[in-house]
Length: 215
Image (cartoon, rainbow, N blue to C red; front, side, top):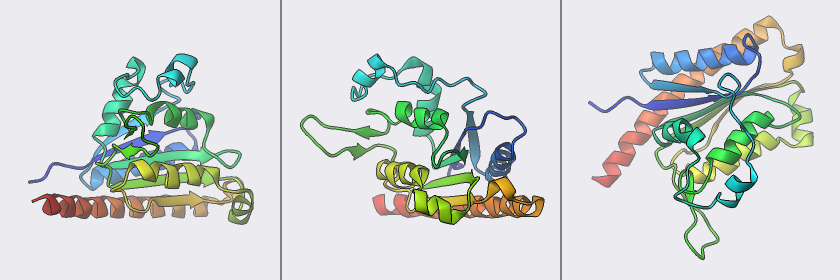
């Protein structure tokens, strides 16, 4: 019997009883009900340091250096079959805490390799079968489209390059959050659960195809 899938949820919101927290819990519950193991990194709760300092920046391409305070984060990334982000979109992008997490964890030796003399990275997060984003926007969709959706470009395009087996990311967004009714929020929660459950099924199928292709 194949091992259970492993899902990593990277959650970023400072308020304990926020709608984002309800989304996090719904996502985690959907994974567990679908038979996947689930790890939640709650960046604010753990007091994550998002600052990429001078020394760490200078060593960012050192494949052998792994900052000690990120050991659990690296381990969770490397065993993840599904990589999930739950956060609010602020000023048309992810919160600074989440952007800092990406800056610090998506480093050489963990997320990619850059061989000497090369100008193109080699992706390392090849285990990831699906990337899922669950986010809210205070503004309507047309304004986000006009301004430019920076968060979507970073995660749905940028991170996809280092997760080459993930396919097209699943992007679940509630627009107009500032004026959304209780019914709209409830329906979004249901949609998120349905899509996350479907993502688990798709990841299982993808994993089976991958194993078969290597036999």
